[in-house]
Image (cartoon, rainbow, N blue to C red; front, side):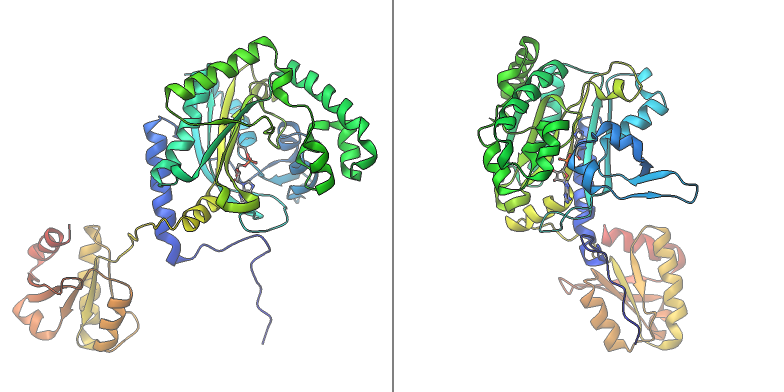
Length: 425
Ligand code: HAM
């Protein structure tokens, strides 16, 4: 026997029996996005590597260690998107979207790729629901975006388990001062830093704060915090953001340790955390990136957004025993009592499908008993039993498998579908 090829480490198949969960989440994402007037944007799975180097940052873990980068047959360096913001910024610039109506509000539900060490809640292919808002530097926009993320969790009954943590990393001037302070701090602890962090110290000391080595983590505990380096404007902006969160009755804590693992952030950064998830407890991360559009060749355009990890969301639902209702029951299974009636059942199915009724009939040549068992196993709501007597009389029994109630249905051309729709709806 030939060896079976398995799914790659850190990737997961989504199987048909999980469809109802994904359908439900998609509905929650879409309806919540609609209520905040965000519109969908779809960008390609791969982009020029340069896009991520320039936006996410050359010294970040994502760019240095985690990107799936390859050369295509034309010799171009391409990368599977590790995150969504860069591609969205590229697309809005390419299509001049920010030259029209502002604010521009977009969302996406896509897969992303990072070569990370897989563990619970951390995969190499994962799903994110994300949103980006362009054109506003007002603190109301920060509060609205955080409220949007929180509302999704609320819709999923997760709000009570989630903590909103906020911080401000300041503008580029504040960041410069802060990085200088960090550099000075870590320079003194240099001898205890790991090899990787010694390089980070030279290129971007803030990235030492992301280091997972226990020793570097311990050193980082007493490192300077961004809030002590905010200029007056950034300080006022952060105060105002907190006020707006209070207005919206959104509970938060200020966590000066949040700096986020991507370089483009300015001012507000935030995370939604579920402590039940252990090491990978951040369900959602986001913030402002007021300089990115300009740095990517556009005009000065403030922006902000978030990415919500859908795989982690599913884990959180499981941890808190929040059940998603199955909605994928088949409306109707048509049972053909005799084998020669199979083609008849197929025609009845066609008529019903034209009326958007989900239905099936036997495709495996099963016995009557086996067909009944199958209908039960797939949780069909109704079964219709078709025999030659029924065809002759032009009337058949429609049975509700839950209540066991039976109703007579006309098999006449113009009555059949109408009568079934009436009962099923
Ligand atoms: P991020 O913090 O890198 O931000 O990712 C956002 C969320 O995606 C995380 O909080 C987590 O739930 C999920 N996530 C990240 N990596 C993995 C992984 N390997 N496996 C499973 N889930 C993961 C961004 O990606 C930014 N683009 C968010 C953003 C949008 N900021 C502004 N706009």
